[in-house]
Image (cartoon, helix red, strand yellow):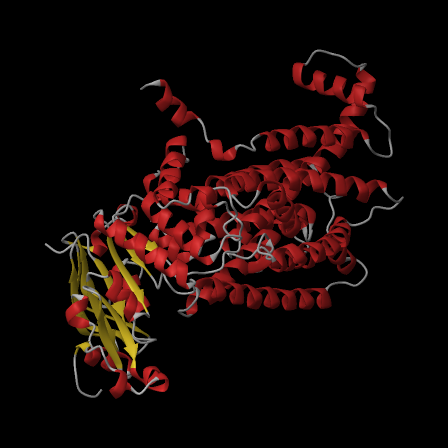
Length: 279
Length: 351
């Protein structure tokens, strides 16, 4: 049984349909990437998966149950949200931010105990960022803030994480660090659904891709089969070849930029891995 | 349960600055005692302590005549006023801190949703209709509640960013009640009612009598406690609605209660003391400088600091000159330069 399923979901803001009868399923332990152009409905889809926006049509099922049938605290103990990078207004200590993850485990009247604090520290330890625990959240870097939010998701006790463009706004080194961390956690059985603007990220770490365009799923499946020249062209209207480097490592090569730098025909020692023909 | 587990349940080590609220409480009690001794008729602190002992234990420590005199001065005149200052300062500061977290903006004040213009307008209307002192207070409270209800109602008309809609609703509702207040002032008798309205709007505690202070103290204390209880939810709300929702918080329900408690206690402050501005804006800033932004500790510290601040300012207002300076004028004169100073910090994100 799939862990998280979107069954024919539709959603509209006012008269505009953002998600149009869209379906896919996600297995436990997979690292799923949502790929699609700006405004294709990625963020809306993520919020629908989280139950923050109830779908107008169709339903989202988590562990076989409709997401609307979960109590919100019960759901928060299973599914965590890592929002897009944003500037915080208040200088909470990183530890206090992680501690917020314990809220769905607490009754209205009970407060955080030493055990909650220990769990928060363990989550920071797991990501190797315990040294940040006393630092103000407003003063750490974007990459560190993203890691703190992932620590909060761990502290929440959730095993399914929904991340909205987690690599956005991170420098190159931090992007690699983040993806490596997500791949490691995914190997431990955590499930990730993240949106991204970088097909390379999908090729590097994802186990499943969902390609979205105009609120529809254009293609879905393992990256090897889905991240192809044709599909990237359909998504982005850009000619991109997917090259195989080494045994099992692929990268995207935008043709337009490549042709500026060299005479493609003459220097072409690699063969494009997937797809052929013109866009 | 082993010892470690018991310790786990008992201690909250992230509140390692618990000594500060204790210190502030002692400071507040000291300031209150000193303030009781200050005034046109001098009373020594020693006598105040004897008087308090007699009040509490019933064991006579003072001569009967002296006791009656002190009872009149301390209990009937000074104590209600000082208690009102503590309550109003605490209420404005706590609701200000709560609003700043809720609206994710360290520069907002408890009047953001129009409670202060609404309550002022209500009070002025009550004076115009001359329904007696209690009628004025009732109109004042109702006006504050109505203004916030209108702001929330406007915000609910349209879909969109909830916080932004609420702020816009507050601006509209506040402006509406400011205009209505102008109408009331325009209609008021310029020799009698108008000066009373104007004086009320300047803010002051000279009208705080023991009866009023006693009956407002119950809702004010309950409202402050209500906000304190929701401090953890305030922390989460200050990260944004979606994050709060994903942490299992019923955002609209929690926000409703936060706005309700903050509005009730802010309106109560106008009922007793008129318009006293700037306290709810600057005291939470000072609190944040002392203990950081965690509302679990910030709210109680703000409440204590606010009470302390307003008692001292009220002492200045009644003792500095021969005539009493309206409290609202002093809080504004102190608040504005302070605000200019904190703007620098607010830009850095500390708030």
